[in-house]
Image 1 (tube, one colour):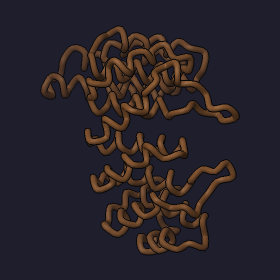
Image 2 (cartoon, rainbow, N blue to C red):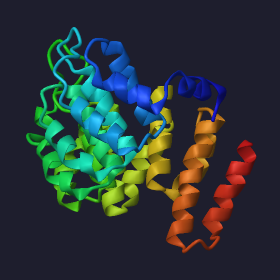
Image 3 (cartoon, one colour):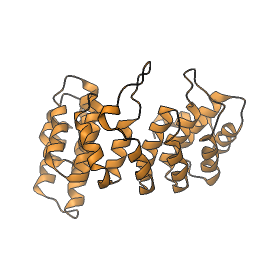
Length: 270
């Protein structure tokens, strides 16, 4: 654990964090406690039950009308890995706050429970034509990136026809999320190659995003392109590690030529 994380951990005990989350007076302390419980993976039953209560909080409201505590509680519940959070998080996918829906989709992806697939698919209703920006807001009408990535991770092949059109969406990150999910669901190289081409873009943040997507899906043909990307070596190493893990898993832990090539690329970046 890094020194910064040690200092953060020392600021609270588990009991204090739970107590802070339960009280109603100090909204900042509640928000921090929810983050802290997720950050340090506090899987005690009382922590989980208190976070589930925070998932229904009505008190902590942002100036834009959002629900910051609910968002943090959703993120934390995903990190804690307790399946008792699945149904409450599914309900949150229909909540008015965009960022609560986004955090819940991300949490459900981590929890890896297929019960959420039908509700996630509903958020794609209307297709690309309806996937427009909310007037006066910095986001689209739905958290498409998080929803599509979750469906891909969950292996939701029934959603292929819904996801595929988003390859043509005008928002880069949504387009890359669709390519990532389509590769996961079909194993077709054409979708992996969309992410490879994204590595050549002008925007560093998008190149970083594509690196993480390629590592997450284990598109082994992207090894050389990843190593040559104009981005931090640390991120390229993370992406290559994802390729290596996928290749080893595919080959029953046997070292293939692809694995050797990937390891050589990793060595060149060290």
